[in-house]
Image 1 (cartoon, rainbow, N blue to C red):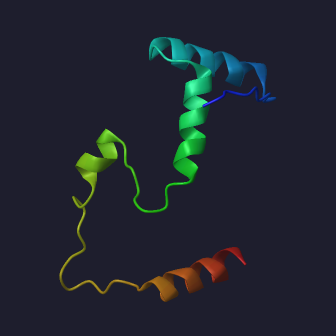
Image 2: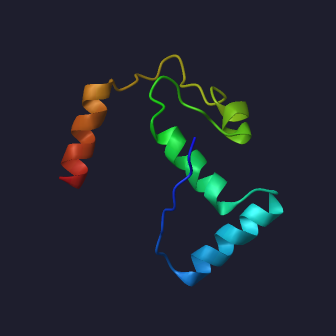
Length: 82
């Protein structure tokens, strides 16, 4: 696959942070950005980080607590945020 150049403009502090992160993780900023864009197309499954994966399902609602369905949740968001 042929690699092409992409120019991004952002604050200097964020660029330094990205470069530091890439160096600390022995990768490149280009690979991090490419991975981010590659994950945007994944709609078949949600990929969670290690901490989120361990915590998923740990907070279950009480058996006698009614859970709002999706439509109710979306309605409440619409009322709150307009």
